Image (cartoon, rainbow, N blue to C red; front, side, top):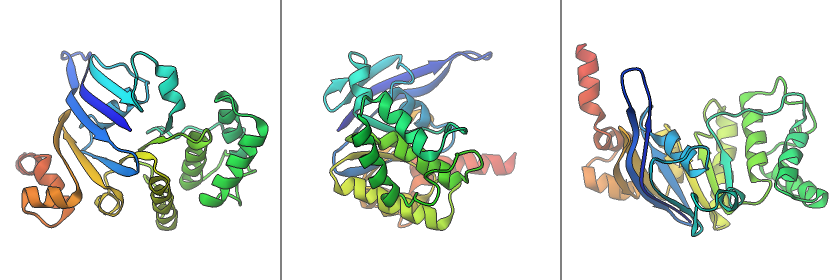
Length: 252
């Protein structure tokens, strides 16, 4: 389980400080997929980077399975499997070697790593490229390798920042099934996406973020009831207050 409470983060810019995250708070539960939804620049990725210890918040608290990120970031990292917004893989290594390397970083023995790779190769349909160098991989192959690398240590909490970005239809369908399997295993999954169809199909609860603030939290049906709108895309546009912005942009 992940608890985020009153997070703030500012960055320096030539025009002055930019307050990217303003009091963001929500809970992601075990056995659920929590969707993090927001327009570009809303503060989603900054929030996730603070969660997986890449950045430190200016203010606020993050707990993963009851462990305070600020007090014991190493213990928190062991409990997190992270697919960040950057999908970098080591191009001179095969997919298998990329995953093995991260397994060793987590202190796993060779037998455990082999067993984990074997299981994920089937689940993620990686057999045909597992022993090829990643240089020249498609976007889907790189993403699958990065996901397997992130989960080799069998974490209970999984953070995925737009995992289907750039993937083809069949790869996306397979990844959705994989996320449902993670949920069925009782893991806590946070899933960031711009694709409403995926959010509607996968997420138990949705956190809508806009301009660095949480605008709404609830199940898809609760958010529909809150706005009186049936289409989830319309719900998102209303809750994120994008309608007025779109009107102003059209007039500009």
